[in-house]
Length: 183
Image (tube, rainbow, N blue to C red):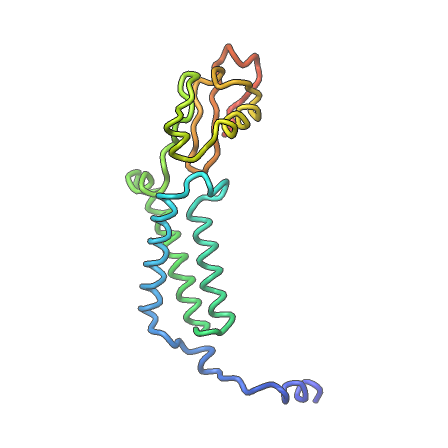
């Protein structure tokens, strides 16, 4: 009785708009596919180091699923099946890119950038720093974290595909300090 009294004051529910798709499912799949691939390409070209420890596909997947699910949950203009199909499409593309990258080296080179040299034989490669908008101070900070004081102590340093900087010091110049960051 108490629950019936609470439900009495609520407006009637339109179950059809909640559970039946209001947009053709093929359109949702196409929109999800186009958005995923477009955002992936843009992020791959523009953002390399900003993704941090998350892989770019992980960041993209989380962002798009959150947006797709929000629309279905809020009920603003789509039904639950619309959100489920869109989230499924996004998950499919994320898995497909990971699978293709694992299976085919040429595809992995398209989806994950190669390590970018920042220091070579103790010399700072300023052109590569400019390309990724990395300052000399940021490089020095990474070297200090490795126990190194100057880039002249570094045989090689790379910005990895996940945005981290790995450092390989010269054997005789670091005095027992400084190990590779990626180990």
